[in-house]
Length: 395
Image (cartoon, rainbow, N blue to C red; front, side):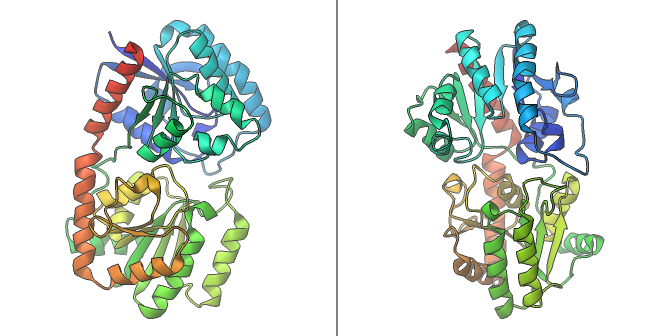
């Protein structure tokens, strides 16, 4: 008999751009193992529906955060739906760490219903960071009531183990990558065609960043490094993809963006840096990866950045900050380059090194693609997740 997994996302997940939503939209649409049935609590109807039905949506132009009132009301809505439909699911899989979901984990433990929380970001939803918050110790105690924690990297998993979660309770499973969508160039002619299509400079060495323009992502470090690298290597061009205003991401720091634009103007490089904004079309994003040369991601903190995996799948050499979450992904000098967190000088040096050496660029890019093909296929991810669900039911 199939295991019915009910996924609980934040009630505003259709109006709040986020990588995990894209991950699960892809996962639900490609799922082909009939041992698991995926269900979702649809926030529009407060009904339990098939996962693909719930995820048949496109983001609107304006996105918003959930208000405190929305969060408060959701406690009662969530429990009503879960209790009334108790016989329709076997496992609860939660993707949001609000009080409503924490309390649901406690309730599920009391009812002997397996509940799993999926952890995606260091500190924000791991015990080491949560415990520092107001009522943080209580939140961690609630988290311990979940039968399972699914961490998207070993480093996140280790934080749970450090704070007393058991080895039997914590699972680690890195995300898969859509290898049909994100793949290397077929030829240099394709790159030229794509650059013409997007009106990118044909002969520049394009450095690509994908992510929100917030300090945590290291966009300030990237710009500082680019300014230095461009002064020594004038052929560089910086392409920045990601939410750049509050309509695209309500959490954007507009003061930071204003400062970045000032630096660009002060250094007279406005024709060498392009802010493309949020791109929701995944096909277009995949083509932009292939139109670029080097991927840069100097983030200060991550769980496991999907954009790095997508860039590697696209055959790009990646230069990333030395995040613990990437320690099992990047082999320095082989399939990518590490730079110390928060070090623009080191990033500048690595940009110059890779952009000035076509052989190294191709070598690292090819190794990156090989790694993703071997370790991050959908089939492998699906098989591992099925086993995790079975373990939760059987233990």
